[in-house]
Amino acid sequence: MPLETVPAATTAERLVEVLERDGAVIVEGLATPAAMGRIGDELAPWLTLPIEKSPLGNDRFKGMKTLRTSSLIAKSPGCRDLATTPRVLEVLDRVLGPQCATYQLSWTQAIRIAPGEIAQVAHRDTNMYPFARPGPECFVNTIWALTEFTKENGGTVVYPGSHLWSDERVPTPDDEVAHVEMAPGSVVIYYGSAYHGGGANVTTDRDRIGIGLAYTLGWLRQEENQYLACPPEIARDLPEALRTLIGYAGHYPFLGWHEGADPALHKGAGQRRKYATRLKGRG
Image 1: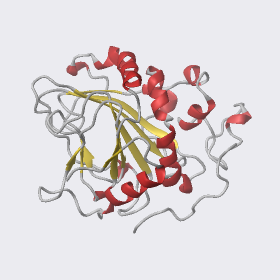
Image 2 (image 1 turned 90 degrees about the vertical axis):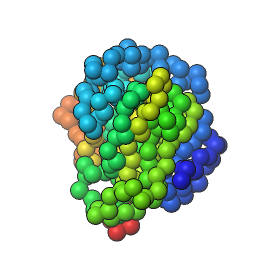
Image 3 (image 1 turned 30 degrees about the horizontal axis):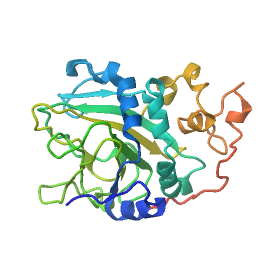
């Protein structure tokens, strides 16, 4: 079963409709080839390392023939632009927005799946949070194609509709599965509650490289420690909206304060004063 693929002009309302139904959607050409080429150049010092020198290490879950590097907001100005893509933020406004004063960037990774890699274990990104399933959508992931994604070279695998499954249900060979196939500059957006994983790369000569940027509710802890990944000496020169997105801001009314910090960081400007006290969920 293929995932629905829509053009870049598709409205956020329509994208959320597809996400609510399938748990994932592919948006074609949301970034330009030039923008993705720039990101490839900026990340080349890490992405061209030998697999055994992967900055995040190698194991059965991360992949024995997969290279991963993080801290992308510090490493790549182009990734900063991807993280604040207006259409993506419009989707987040509708999915995460009603449940927090402001949402935040949770983790960043560039992922290079090399030939010979086996399929990653299917998993949910929301398993790090103690929410029963089906339940609130607290995590939204995006993976941007830096290179072409195909079924053969390790295109991300998604189980459509699995965001609606209970905690007791796990993927089986009888479940429908979709392989993300898309061109550079396209992006797959999926709920963290949907089962997914990196695909097997059965080619002999084609890497699959994706840029992962994930978002979560502003009152949950980020998966990647953004204050270490993008320390103050770098963050202070970022646009205010991006600083807020990576967590250099208070979450209304009292989360994230620090003695002596710029009050503007913690006044909650532009944040929701009222948001759901009962999380949006299906359970």
